[in-house]
Length: 246
Ligand code: UDP
Image (cartoon, rainbow, N blue to C red; front, side, top):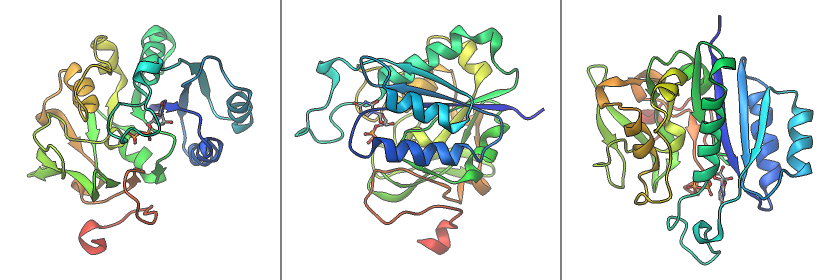
């Protein structure tokens, strides 16, 4: 039986929110066996998202939690100043852990922000994840791509411009984890208290993972099949052989 992919998406109001969510929902409609957990950063659930989810025909769970104003970015703040989507991703994790008995037996968890671009291939790369699967992410962190450095089939470090010394120097879009691991380590979550750029490392360290546990995907991390929105270059989607493309 095909393992289920649970996808946690935090979403916040902005002019392009509905367009981004429409695009993401249309991508997800093309993926088998998924359950989309969408958490609005709002005081209550909006009609916009309720309708969009209903219309999508997807399996979904609609949640909301408001980020308190002290954790919200002001429009003049540089975009790295405060983490975004922290409480929302944690609400998604809480939902999973509270529904342990109704979850699919074989299941994977992926954090998909609403503004990224996802090749369909990424979902099949992550579907059979034993512990944690990793792959490159395009257009992120001041680079055309970031990627795990792989030697002899194992992740040995990180190709990133910023802080490659982080335990897991990856973007949120660059990994998926087995849901059993999420249930086994209930303390693993995100936090507004950690230093910037350490959300991913905080969560993955909470799952007691080490580099040796990571399963390199996308042809041993040589293909870019997911794009973050953190770098203003024209869209890159689909398989891109990084050596040829860059
Ligand atoms: N987000 C949120 N609350 C906010 C800002 C953003 O829930 O106050 C969501 C947003 O919709 C996205 C995710 O958190 O799905 C990451 O936000 P963004 O892309 O702005 O952060 P970045 O990827 O630049 O760190």
